[in-house]
Length: 288
Image (cartoon, rainbow, N blue to C red; front, side, top):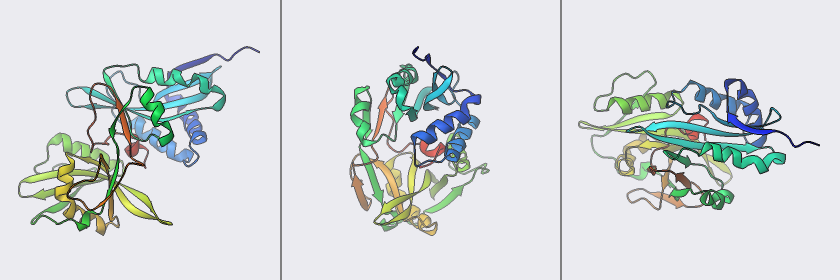
């Protein structure tokens, strides 16, 4: 019997249904509609020139047998970031999986990030040349922090056109993420405007999940600490008493717990990512 002809190529529009089927097989906790929705968001977003829109597909005799999603975004001064996202290859073709990873990470000018690696894959990722930039997660109870006098919280919607004190680029970032279903907020005190993007999620706490928020964007974690009291009260009205933040240890000025058993994140490339920026990643486009 002849060996199958295996090749790796970019995912095209016509492949999206096959890609969603592959990923549904590979991720038992996700429905096909979950993948379809995320792929449609990838289809609609702007991407840097000459970058793959969706990622790469592995074919055997013309049949899709593997997929690796990629999410490209531009980061200041033309620097490119690529979120190496969901990966799956049918078991009988796993020995060809390196074709996907080699193709996906061939551009040395791009900084590749992996923001959701399973713990059992950490040694494999490190062997591929990825370095850790985030060691874990801090779960804060922001309402326990003192609220700065005079600080108020404004919400940004997808149709918000102006927000005093906020640069246009940041306003566009908040607007686009509000359209994805994130909660975009601005903490204001005097002439200062400090932007935040959060994503609703549920955290396991005992037998029952607890409503919470994942911090997707802040200029610096110190700004979140400063605004935690006001933000915590605004979030409590929305039924979310907890906020999960990427962290490399306990965060001074916040009440909560740090864990390094989850939340680890890696990068490979010339521009190390900063903690506190998960915009335009799988977390936002596909959901927690």
